[in-house]
Image (cartoon, rainbow, N blue to C red; front, side, top):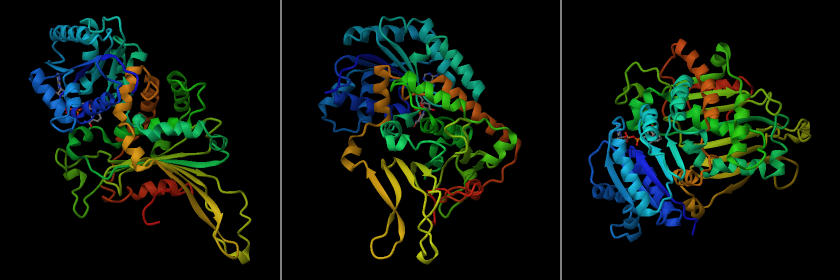
Length: 490
Ligand code: NAD
């Protein structure tokens, strides 16, 4: 059994899609493992009118277990509900009284986690009232969890952060980036800093380029109205891709703690070159999917304007101006309606300086580059591509792959990102959350691309569903005499 953690949770937006689909099932997993046991209580709050019992039934249903599951019934009995409009100041007193009651009932030592799973426009309001109305006035810890998106550009993110900072210190604020809860993302650090053969080669002398691909097979589904105001650059690059890239680019932290890891990630992001207009135009491309055989074009999706210039795809080249990475580009791409759903990192090493096997009578194919691939999802694992001699007479070489994949049993036991992240919040460990500095440097980079795009009229749609994005994404990398490691029709 795990160490039991003690806290009250207040979920704002407690009847939302995220809460039922991810948050409560993740908490139930923590309950089954013993991290949550007797000493926890939950208040769900939103505008919907529900009794405690009705809420408990909904929570129970979200767990997807048999009706007779006693453990789930006991878990759900820790949940209560308060209908509440977050802009209504008076109602925070009702919430406070309920919080104090649960604190006594479950002996929670004044520990409180405020989970803001509602529209970002409310984050500042809620944080303000939590403080002024005394909900944070306890002897235990007070932590606030913020869902994405954290702003839509640097200025709005800055404003939001200022509002939060009036009520909470940076170490009390946990900005969710659920990619950081993924097993293989956390493995980047283990592989880099736990292996001499990896870290000693982890620089521009031996690495030719690094490629990060977050590919989605689906379109916008029912998120169209949100997505049309966001786009791939804001929705995926500013947060998930920037986080992955900073873990790949950072120096070794002094210790494996949130403070030291974040310091190195920030340092890496500070050396990311912020592009001028010409660089942004050359080094980034955007796309929007058109119609496919059985798929309508993005502009024909429900709740998308027919003249939308929103980006459903982005590819780009990132350059770090530091000693480790100067001259080694990071290529990134992400998009919707692509060939498959997966996330991977391909680290392409430089080829041997001299290919001694290519003497004329040998007819040997030129040596290929070594590639270390980190498969993030759906199947977690690694693959290292080496050149080896083919079996048999003569001397020919061929690339072979050394593979490791997390097996099906282990992968079933892998905690859901939200389970891991909620556990981290209870421990007070900010390693897998985005700090304000990380968020702000990422926005400054992304804003510059956005600014240039806003000045130009894109030629949309420019890619077909089931492809890997527009031709311009291939041209971007081919211009540098390279190619995507993952590509169709190899
Ligand atoms: P949702 O629309 O399903 O739920 C929103 C919740 O907020 C509801 O419970 C609603 O009653 C409540 N609410 C709205 N206005 C309110 C008010 N004035 N006072 C009190 N309660 C109010 O949204 P969601 O999909 O659960 O997303 C919640 C947050 O999580 C958003 O910030 C979203 O961007 C983020 N997020 C969601 C997902 C997802 O998969 N759903 C993924 C990543 C991030």
